[in-house]
Image (cartoon, rainbow, N blue to C red; front, side, top):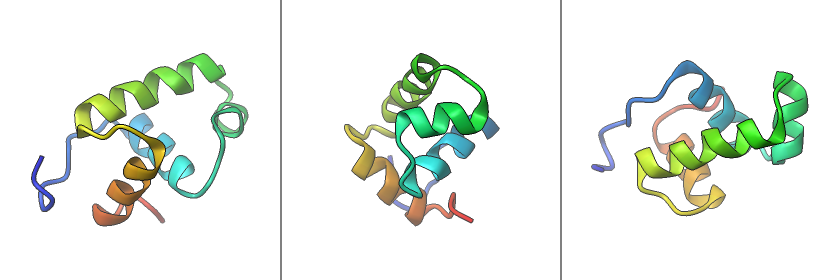
Length: 70
């Protein structure tokens, strides 16, 4: 993935990515969105695959680089 090209993310993935980058835990994201922790984990697994990242820190950096944070 090029650093200048933002990956194609769904609105829910963008929402979860922003919450993660803001410091929310998986449980916190689940509570805020009214979904299960397992669903959050699934979304984040898909995000890591799409973005070729391996952890939440790399996802947070990606969110900053591509303007997914409010």
